[in-house]
Image (cartoon, rainbow, N blue to C red; front, side):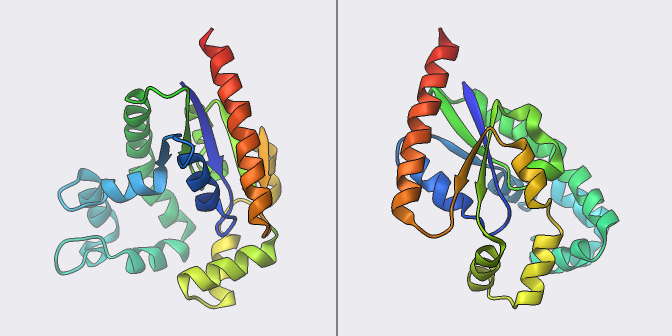
Length: 201
């Protein structure tokens, strides 16, 4: 199984890219979704988060109060590291389990913070989705209904563009042209299928 690590800064268009691979029958495992599973009520990671950050990080129904935790973590780099220390080992285990169940020649493992988390050991190749900063800010503002200051703060908390591009085996430029994006994904699909077939020999 060839594992392609898909990454990119917030607002770069990772979902637009991963959706195009999924339409070609390629399994997509998203670590953000794995993290959501890990913080469902009854999961050990949720109890660990409440113990570390306080019970007010849970709502009245015992679910994670994401906005409250996000505020706390974005304001405190040490807090972010403590949260990552709880979640990242669990995400690694769950990702490996999901990959082991697959039978396709290759899959995508979406790791938005690949440069920050050091999870490169989970993947064979790195595909970076890149877009101009102004376009990323516009997308984040529209998607999350936040102002420019908040969007820039989120971007500043992530690895910079050069750090991500340094990890890349392949790059998808995702500025605005959807036809070009379709063509690039089709080309990469053929490339990865060939690599996976060669690897299986």
